[in-house]
Image 1 (cartoon, rainbow over the protein chains, first blue to last red):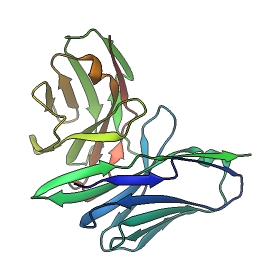
Image 2 (image 1 turned 180 degrees about the vertical axis):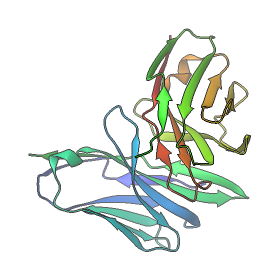
Image 3 (image 1 turned 60 degrees about the horizontal axis):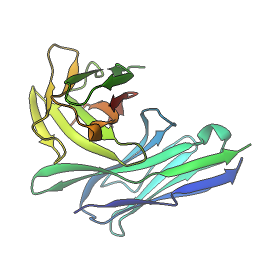
Length: 114
Length: 114
């Protein structure tokens, strides 16, 4: 059974710092992995989608990497800003016995201090 | 930029009542999804829908839940007889392709069952 874990659960950093958020999954047979941002009490905003054949994706100050064999993905945020404060979620798509599963991680709550 | 919309933003109901949550997916998307997030917990997949049929559903999506695309734009989630434990944020999402493409989420409906 696929399980997705994110560490740390919470992170507080000063503005301008580069940081790395981690996502681990137990079953390496995935289709893709998506990173989201969720502002408090709000919906999810898609940040990056990495297909299983890809190693990384970049968008602006964000870079997501995927290492399927070790069951890990990282989201790198460069030069963090207070506006980056939010909860970051990863979600993994996998197929088990012909059935798609879409499993979210537990999330990392990020606070960037001005 | 096209976006997924959901109504109402907040729904309060009495236990045992029926509720219908509404979503307008992005117009050229073909796949639609419902997720829920109980306060303080992970986002959980409920169901995916394509070509007027359920394509995948989770163990959570039992007989009290149903989905429908009543016209060319709306996508609804009906909970037949609400229970206290149905209180959660319900998110609708849509995508071009089933699970293997970026999913775009709506802002959510907060359902409170009293």
